[in-house]
Each structure stands twice: as C-alpha cells, then as structure tokens.
Image (cartoon, rainbow, N blue to C red; front, top):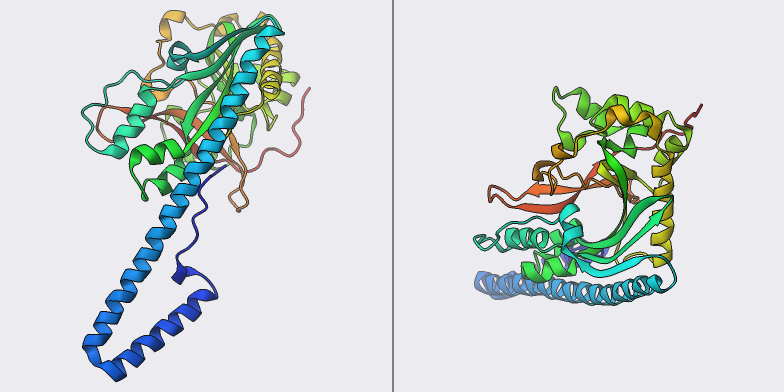
Length: 358
C-alpha cells in the first residue's frame, strides 16, 4: 500500500556500514598522521558534506519515484472511474463524475484554511475542505438505495516520509490513495454500530478497562442492546466476521470501504455493494422500531468531533503487530480550529477463531 520504500542511510547498512566505517576511520588516521589536525578537519568536513549530499540525493530520487508511481496510479484510477461511468449504459443506475454533496456526508469539512501559516497544517485542512466524491454511482439493490464512490485520502506513512523531502503540497499529492466507499441508505436512522463489535476487542479491551469514560471514537456501538440484537441474527454475525467487508451503521447509512492506490474495479465495487445491501436486508426490521433515532437528532454534516463515517479497513502487514483497522474520521489540527480527514489505525489482534450462531 505504501509507495515510499526509503532505503537506510549508507552508515546504517550491514555489512557495508562496517566496511564504510573502517575505511573512513583508516582515512582519518592516515590524514592525521601525515597532514596534521588541520587537514583532518578539512577531510572530515568534506566527508560529512559528501555523506549529507548522498542522503539528499537519495531522498530526491525517492521523491521523484513516488511522484511517478502516483501519476501511474492516477491514470489507472481515471480509467477505472471511466469504466464505472459506462456501467450506466447496461444497468438501472445514475452516474456523476464528481459530487461535493456526497462528500459533505462522508468527510468533507466546510472550513477556512487561508489563515493557516504552517504549510503542513494548511495542506491537511485544505484536503478536508476540498474533498470530492468521484465516480458516484447511485442504484438500488435488495430494495435499498445504494451509492458507490471514491474519495482521495492521505496515506499517513507516505506523507510523513515525503514531507521531509519536499514541499507539503507535493508531498500530500504524492501520498494520495483511494478509498472506495459503498453506502446503503436505510429507511430510518439507527444507533451507531461497527461490525467490530463481533470481534475480540484485543487492545481496545485493555484500553476500555483502564478508562472510566471511553472516547466515542473507540466505541463499537452507541447502544449495546442494539448491537446484541443485530449480532444475534446468524446472517449478520457471519457478515460481521467477513474480513473483506467490515461495515458500520451510522445514522441512516450502512457503510463499508476498501482502500487501494488505484481504486478497485467497477465489478469489485458492485459486488461489494450487493453484499452490503444483503446485510441491510438481513437486519431484523420487525424489531428495530424501538431503536429508531429521530432524524432531527442527526446533524448534517455529522459533528466534527466524531465523524459518523467511521469505516474500517484491514491493514495486514508482515510484522508481528497483526491486522490493524483504519478508522476514518475528523481529527483536530492542533489549535487551529480546523480538521483533517484521516485514517487512524488501531491494533486489534486476531479475530475469534470459531464463532457460534444459533
């Protein structure tokens, strides 16, 4: 998923670091013995300058490589969006190339960034303020309205590396990846629920035990009774353990997302949309009326302190940390009064090995 693959500095390599250190030490000793302290100082300054330039040149090459990779990924994404748009010719769907209205419900923040002096903060705030839904398809599955679209989001690891090499504007553009979102509109608003409520909470359990008031962004549900009811439905419990379709219920939206550097194929997006609509159809609607939320209680856009678009993305690495989940939400940028739209990772450990359904 990351485009940056920064190599370690020359002196941090093995076994080359040992050879380089030995040769450098030998050079310093020879210069000191035959030319004195002044010459040694000159050689050391030149050696340090060469080392610094080598690191700088390596960073420039890495930055240029990432920019090229981003351009290639952008072209692939444009082609995928064009293919998605052509689907309207073969199905009962509506297509919109770009939509700020959809983005306003799923991450876009109306905020002024003109007064931000720090370029790193400004680009992050501007990204949230200018977020646009791309390749928006609207259709119906299983009797529910379904919307599929893409959002440009920031790969935090890439941005943290790239911003050290160049201007923040170029760094944030080169670090962009695509979040393909599927959203099913439900008949009425319901309490917040994450499919992770069915999983072993892992690290979050330890956190919750140590806190009297668990922050809203760490909760899996607003209503434990609601969660228990839904997860008592065998089909919903199985769907909650689907690694490829982690979902949330946020107000009147059932949401799932997939993150990639290029976006996913139209066929994959529609398959995810149909699977998500099937989850909506499996909700026990005959027993949900007591949990119905008043529409007036749900502001639009969602409150910035807790974005209702908190979709999860599995991030499987090769290290021992195991799978993590990306929680997409608004995050305050210092004390500027502005917000970034970020994916915050949580290490959740392994799922339950064998879950039982009645």
